[in-house]
Length: 178
Image (tube, rainbow, N blue to C red; front, side):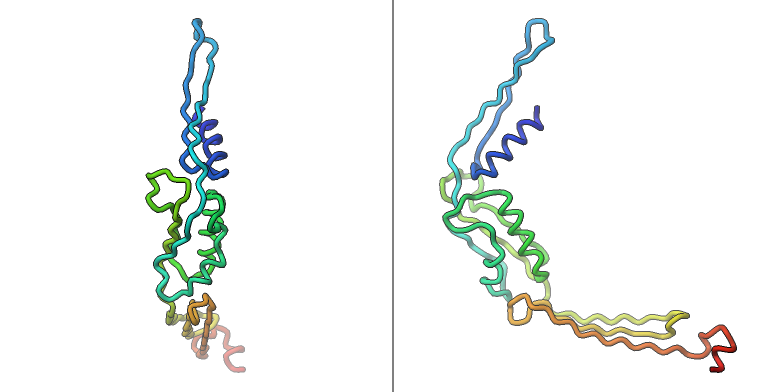
């Protein structure tokens, strides 16, 4: 019964009824072999997006984030649009976390402000990877990257790889001599 209640509730939330509630009551027959299950729905009002507020974007242009949003001002607040928006913003690769939710979520209202909170990753990185193997010898990799050029989520990666195979690492004498 709980699964059925959850499916019904998810359906209503997908239609914008973010504050819908469904209760379940079970009446057993006198012989307790049959039961009547009643689902009671408190629909409340359909929630529309009053505003979209973005926080936490210190380096990233707000327009880059807004372009990835499925929710629109004046539109119905749907959970699927929230999930897709979070996924699309996260795929930019410049944020460590992305969360979306209603402002004052515990207070039901016909129009709600949606808060989009992002946490930006460090935009630049430098990676040094030394290594040693019998196949490649001594090797090193130096990689510089910028994840958010100009605040537009444009990524740049520069990589240099060097390797040197000393003859002491070559086990076959015939190959070593050539």
